[in-house]
Length: 196
Image (cartoon, one colour):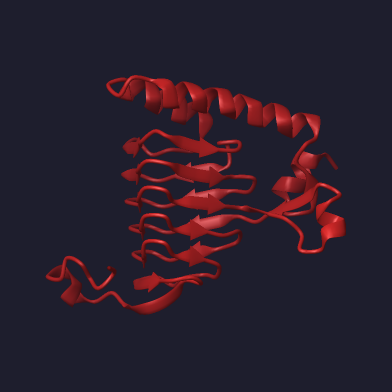
């Protein structure tokens, strides 16, 4: 089994094999081009993202600077918005639904490294998919770890470290990120929603 096949299957793999290094290089070159374009070159930036990602909706905005490992493992829905300095380590699939808002400095990490140093020092790592539902808002500086699912309509507070699944229709905050409360009809008139 090739290292890429192991990576995509969620098995331990070596990220510095020739094939994976070459694929990351292709992504780096596209990302460099994306991040270097003049701000008014929106159509060119979007075309680069469409080449890079596994799937995009018709309407999306990704602000530079943006970083990812491969790109082809990122699937975004309609009306996606990622603010400055978004990092997606997409060694496994990252699926993001419609109407997702990602604040500045958010990081999504599918890759992990073994806890035991002997295995880690053998240059082995693993990757587990991330799934983010529709209408999700990730606050500034949030980190989402490997294998996490965030349910529809959830709000993740700024600076949160999401280590476990978060259900739909909740505000969740903290390190580690925990559900604070459900989102209710009252939130239509409470713009801040106690997510501050």
